[in-house]
Image 1 (cartoon, one colour):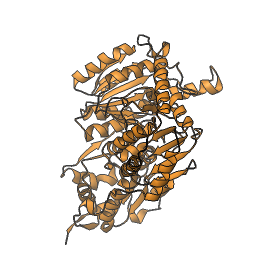
Image 2 (cartoon, rainbow, N blue to C red):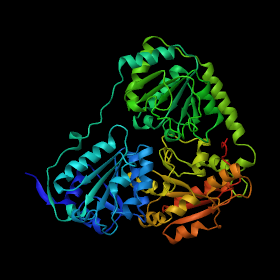
Image 3 (cartoon, rainbow, N blue to C red):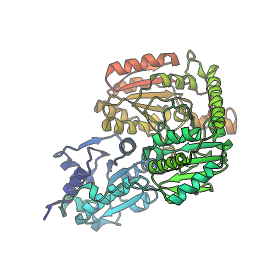
Image 4 (spheres, rainbow, N blue to C red):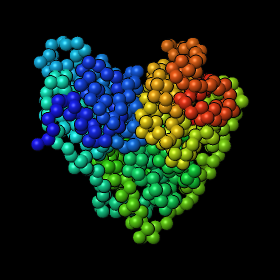
Length: 552
């Protein structure tokens, strides 16, 4: 016999079982029988100022650790505030468990306060929705949520708990080891698949590797590098793949996205064969499927991802690390030697592009306000190896494709859902997950306006996050798109007054400084690091340099 406890205590027992250290959320009347027993455990409840901050914190935790981050919200309006951030976790494959709460079962459908149809609301925005209508099912529901969030393609799972289930009902807790119900298999690609891929590769001279988030999830960076060297193949990554391969690796050409460089596009389109590894080839990664690779060999752990958007010459289903290892061994056994000319050409073109890129007014370190590429040039100097870089949607993130990043940086961005308001919440989750790492949050003033309250969360928790605010007093990306498509002076709803956000940050428990020239950025970072407190660096950005139609 196990321990018989009420439903709220049972939820907490399950959180302990799966190793949860923090729960992020905003409490409500329906949540109290879960949040109260947390006080008697080692699990800390981190209350954010908005549920979006909580879900993004859980998302950041999941992206950084590979373990599901956990967030919590009350019924109706609390739960609906999770939806946007949850969409980001779903589209960018981040493991997450959201605990949401309902009114009492007898009142369901009567129009109780804050009532909403959670299944209808969350059905399309999570990997699985699990309603809990009886306390006896809580252990199964929580174990199912953990298993589904982590395995296959990771993603968010919703556990919907009725109020009377957690308050008045009792259930039995019998401990289990998560390894008994959450198996992380190493899928091995079939010999037939690998042999077909090998034969295609042997028939080509110009080969490119196009890598995505699956390389991070599969911890396959070493194999990607080894295969690149064997094939003499340039490497292009998606935005979700940034950081998987060190920028210093000679064969790495850079990221490709809607605002990516002309060289990465050329590497993909001029190659006779492109090996797509761990990418679903989404609209963002392919310029809304405008990219024209000639012949594709696609590697993915999920069979239905292969050939979904582009026809493939060969598909390889399996774990990226093991599949690439097997392919490398096959090629080496047959004495394969690649052709180096294509790689040399791309390396030369990249060097010329990079030299040309950081020239002129757009990269002037002494200009005020700060031009966007001058900022990226300084980021290359100040970001540290083994740090975490949480990047928000919009122009601040779009320009980062031009930067080179230090070794083992953890780069994360809301790529496929484009949910603004990601970076501050994600940085909270990341700093708590890895307090030994430096965490930098890069965001624009548009995103900050949606999440400004989380500065107080950062200040209250005394998290030594460096908030790098890029302020152009506008929804800069949309303003530039309006200019590109509608013409000068046709702006609608994109401009803000000039605000000193550093003073706002100080009022919320942080320190900070304002940067008006890119040359001042290294000193600002030095000040932030010496401060030892949460710190905002506000960069006054020149928004006249446009990312439309392509950044560079």
